[in-house]
Image (tube, rainbow, N blue to C red; front, side, top):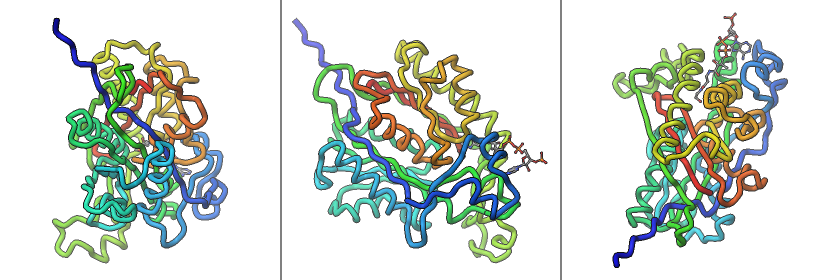
Length: 338
Ligand code: UT7
C-alpha cells in the first residue's frame, strides 16, 4: 500500500499592524488645498489617514507591525529565519528596508529580501514566502509591508488628486509550514503585470538615466512627486482584481459563494464596491477600512487582514480571498484557508 504524502501548506501564524499616531482628517486637508471633506468621502470613501511625524521612517513603522505579528504568533525575533519587506517608500534610495528591519530586530545575518511591487507588494511577497516555506528553504518568515507616503505628496492644489488618498502605515505576518493536514494555509497565489502602463501611476524621478540624476529643474516641476492617471487606474483596478480572484477560484475548484471574506487592496472604496459588484459577492463579505487609513499601498492588505483577524471577522477555517492592483501595472490574488 502506498501512503500519500499529506499536503503541508504555508500558514499564517500571526498578524500585526501599526499606524503612526497622528490622524489627518479631510478637514485638515481642506486647510492646505482646494478640496472638501464631501469630495474626498464621495470619490474615495476616505475620512482620515495617519501621517508620520518628522524623523519616523518606513522601517520604524515596519518594526512596530513586525513586533505585533511576532507577539500574535508567540514567537521570538531570534526564531525568524528570513525577512521579506515590501514597500514603495524605503527609508533610503538604497538599500531597501529589509536590511533595516533585519538589523533593528537583531537578526544577525538572517537574509532579507526587498519586494518592489507597490500596491501588489504584499501579495507578490506572500507568493515568494509561500514558495520558500513549501520548498523547505525557510521555516519562519517575517513578511512586512510598510509605507511612509505623506512626506512626499504634493499638498498644493496641483497634487490634490493624489495627496488626499494616501496614508502611512505597516502590516506584517509570520509564515510557517502547517503542522497538520487540516486543509489550512495558502491555497494559491496568482501574480500579473503589464509594464506598458508604468506612467499611469509612478514616481518618474529620480531616474538614473538622467545625468545628474537629481536636478533642481525636476524638483521645481514637481516631478519628484508620485503622479497618477486616476480614471485609467480606476477602470483597470475594477477589471483586474475580479479577474485575479476568478483565476484563484478556478485553480482551487471553488465558487464565489465559498469565499467568507474578501480583502481587496484599499485604493478607493468605490473600487472595492465595484470589485464586489463585478464578482457578485455580498458586500458584507468585503473587508473595507479605507475610511480610517486611506490608501497605504503595500501595507493596506495586511492592515485590513490584521484588523479582521483580531476582531473575529476572520475565523479559523474561513476562506479568505485577497486581491490587489496598482502601479506597474501589477495585480494579484491569493486564497488562504484560515
Ligand atoms: O493604489 C493604487 C491604485 N490607485 C487607485 O486605484 C486609485 C484610482 N483612481 C481613483 O481612485 C480616482 O480616479 C480618484 C479618487 C483619484 C479621482 O476620482 P474621480 O472620480 O476619477 O475624479 P477625476 O479624477 O475624474 O476628477 C474629477 C474632478 C476634477 O475636476 P474637473 O476637471 O471635473 O473640474 C478634478 O480636478 O475632481 C477634481 N479633483 C478634486 N476636487 C476636490 C481631483 N482631486 C480633487 C480633490 N478635491 N482632492
